Image 1 (tube, one colour):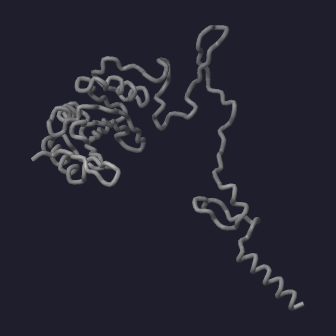
Image 2 (cartoon, rainbow, N blue to C red; image 1 turned 45 degrees about the vertical axis):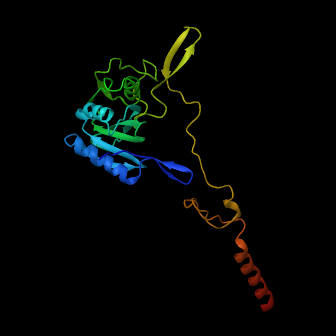
Image 3 (tube, rainbow, N blue to C red; image 1 turned 30 degrees about the vertical axis):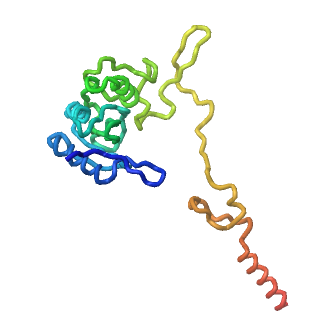
Length: 243
């Protein structure tokens, strides 16, 4: 039985991986890689597989070479930071099968100082992507032939995509005309952090609470609505008649 993910047309959109084919693919991979796969889920018509860090090379090689999977393209590799978890980071590998027309995501969970095996021997493009994950999150990849920073300066301190990294950074740099070079200096904020208020400018015109602005108090002034205006007019007429 083949677990292919044929395209199914629905009106004007083309949906890849119908539910049955996606489940069949998940069952097939779980059966073939039983000792490696720790769990799977479905997110937005994509199969998500969880494996142990030490098994990532074997799993990716299987997904690339198996004729039912044929995930021959690594389209992305990224880190995710969950500071509240014991295994703080996730490394996510996004695979694409052009022939079978499906996408598979493979996730591993690691501790802060845990080293991940490189997958450059499986997908050569992973070399650049692993450098980015190292630069942004500080995730180490054992065996990467050139694990240097790729987006920040080589003297950069810290890893800016970590959630505990300060918004301002630790230092700022500028070009010094006297020294004729770029120099690092402590961060100096020329303007304090601004507190933005996103309340609607129309609130002052009504005593009604606008959906989404529940935090705002009902304005004490402004247009009070036809019902209240009529009530006030009626009250004034009653007082006049009593007088």
